[in-house]
Image 1 (tube, helix red, strand yellow):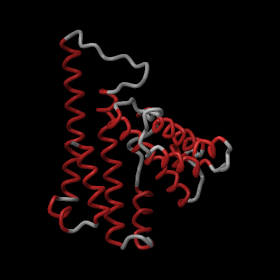
Image 2: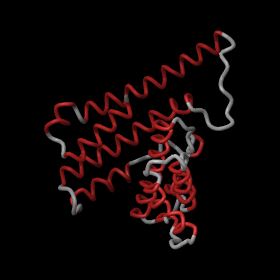
Image 3: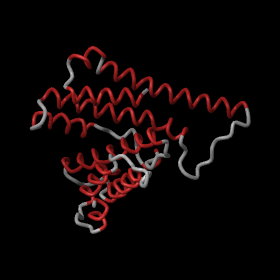
Image 4: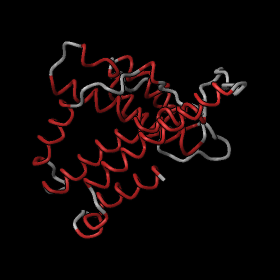
Length: 217
């Protein structure tokens, strides 16, 4: 049904289509559709690029629309990394196609501003979830180099360790990947120490925090 609705073009807003495709790629694949979640993710990425969510900082749009697109793009990046991590597949969004160092100030401010407007969670819980979302972004950035090395993009050549220098370069890359994950782990443990997670987090925030620790491990 979802595929039929997409094919019939019942929605023409690329942001809405990308958001819907992201939700659909969260469904677990069955035996007949082993790549279904990656297919929907690809659809989300393509429509996110149509609305220039990956380049929204350079677009002349209102701050609200810019933050919606920026959040959409980061959700695509997060999902891409998690599918790669869980399903052992190459990344669809490679470092060449997005800037991991792009400023997040606007997104941070937007998440903070909406903390008091939620009809689902109170202010404290909303802030916890916003902080965890930013930590989620930090984790997938830290994971990128590791995933690129373990599951190279389709068509990429596997580096050959034919000399001591090649071996030293490989060790150096591994150490860099490890240090990025260690820095993220330190940041996470500082913001959400074990004692706080067990006693002071809303159960939805506790679930998100626990998932982050599983992804990291």
